[in-house]
Length: 232
Image: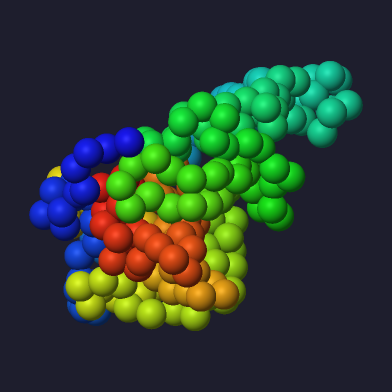
């Protein structure tokens, strides 16, 4: 158990007040200039022999292209798709990967796999975190994709009595790591569930959705939020 309770200034991660987004100009600059095509001039000739030669060459060329791109019988049988598929991650592998993403402070055996929620590859339910101000319970979820991250995070919001996070931080709102203040790491929400202080957040780059809770007797919201700021 840590002997030093992290101060807000010690946090290596944390949210920043959301900045008003300016109206973006149409397009992102990559396709603002219309494409132009400069065709080569066609050279006309009155010689019939030249026309016959050109026509013959065109037929031969089309035949070669048709042979080159025509699907083989094997490809036609499977719809023209590739014969190999990318290996999929098993639930056990996803659980092991999720276990490696856990915040510090969880002793061995503190977290165990549970049946994943809809849209999740793996989910862990955890008991008390040993670090100062740590949550009493937590759920960590590895989502299948960005859409599932949003759905899982929205579930936390919809089941919480949402409040501003300590320090008058927008909730729900974006959070950013102090090392990369211009890059949004995910979305953060603070609230209460059955009188239990709750902090939930998404880590978009990892497709991770986390929810931690304390109890009516503590840690309080400020303590739980301070733990989050140094463990997210």
